[in-house]
Image (cartoon, rainbow, N blue to C red):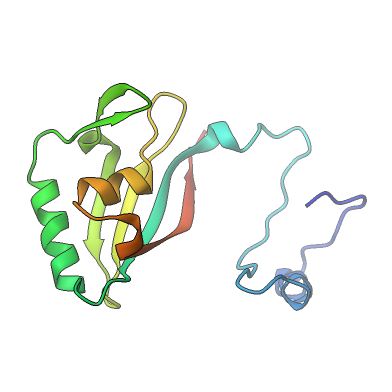
Length: 144
C-alpha cells in the first residue's frame, strides 16, 4: 500500500477497522505501525516465517502429521535438492509443534544465505502438496 499523506494511527483500531471494511475476502489487517520513509527495505529483515500445515487428506490425521514431524526432527540431517543444489533442511527448521487445533506449526528460517520453503518441508515429511494445506501465518523480523 502506498500512502500519499500521513494517516493518524491514534487510535490504531480505527484505521484497522477502516482497512478491514474494504479488504478482499480472506485478508484482514491485524496490526498497523508507522514506518519511517527511510527505513531499510523489508525483505532483508525477514529472518523466519511461521506456517500452519493442516491435513487435507481424509487418510491423514493430525496425529499422523505429528508422528511424521517427530520422525523428521529426530534426523541429524535432512538432505534436500533444490534447483540441482543439495542442502540440509534440518538446521533451517527452527520449530515444529502441533497446536490445539491439530495444525502442525512450522517456523522456518528465511534469508539471503538460507531459505527453507514450506513445500520442501512437506516433501521431507513424505507428503504430497495436495495432502495438506499450508498457510504462512507470520513473518519474523531481525531486531536490528
